[in-house]
Length: 83
Length: 83
Length: 152
Length: 152
Image (cartoon, rainbow over all chains, first blue to last red; front, top):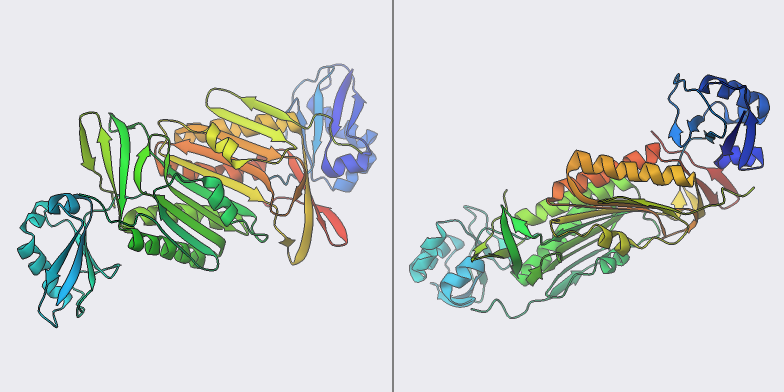
């Protein structure tokens, strides 16, 4: 199954795009996201681990595990600087 | 010598005017103000003592004594409620 | 029994501005006044007539000021705030006369490089204004009127 | 590498409003939005681009937002502020794209019956916004550009 992956700020610049599709095994959970993302987008290592992920526009807490479904919206969120 | 006396808010309503002239002996100090004001304007007692005085647009601190001069501007300041 | 004849006073220096006026207060005017290329933050406070007080319906407030002294005290507040919090610019205006429900009786606008300064100074200034500036309000409600007193 | 296509989002419910927009922010609009007959106080905060950062001259800031999530988070901030401080109404807007020196990137406007609530909530909200809302700014200065990171 495919999920949408959104890139912002520095991760968007590194990606060269603001959006991509990530293929995951059916039944995958959010625990699979980080390893699969690092595999598919190895340049994410340049962020030095300083990013978090969101799922369907909610932050994923560290260690939190949810079952993913096709079409979910995942985002790579580098350190924020709004305001 | 004469000083100007200004009345505000409830003291103005009790006075029926916003301004009056108070005659003082030459060389009087601010210590003379309160007794002379109460004598001249006995209705000030209706304020129940809850007012302060200013001299030339600065509050007079309790116990502070300054020499008055002709033309000084004294004001009766009931409890404030700006804002 | 009329209040003092002059109901307007405006005082200012380099970075501070204070005004007592019977005219409606325009927040934008004061925000523009404190605009500064070195400012990263602008905090404002507006005090507004609300429709009720202690369960009674408020019809309007009437403000009276010892106009020249009030303007000087407002400018003094600006100076004190600038000194204590390193503000860029400061403006305070207080209205006199009738202030209807929804209208502003006082506007404070402070700018600073960083947000904490303008925010804290703004809170301090309205507290201090209520405790020190010679201005009075009379509340008109259904069936009565009363001079208000700020709590210390 | 374009940012996400939709750069505008507006969400609201009864007493709360949040907006992410590339348009210049008009403080008056948000102040009018939080006007309320029961409000005695309106506090606002505007975050503005200033002309220097750590001694370097800032040319402009560019803001990028995860637009729909940012709008939802801003509305959530309004709700949290209303619940913690008993506000009357709350509005927060954040701009995207280029924000020049002197222009506002963020505006918060809160109203409350009494002054303390709106003032404290406003201070809390800008701190919380900087810590939780998915928005990024890139600073362009003489000879370079850099993605900023808010301090926790």
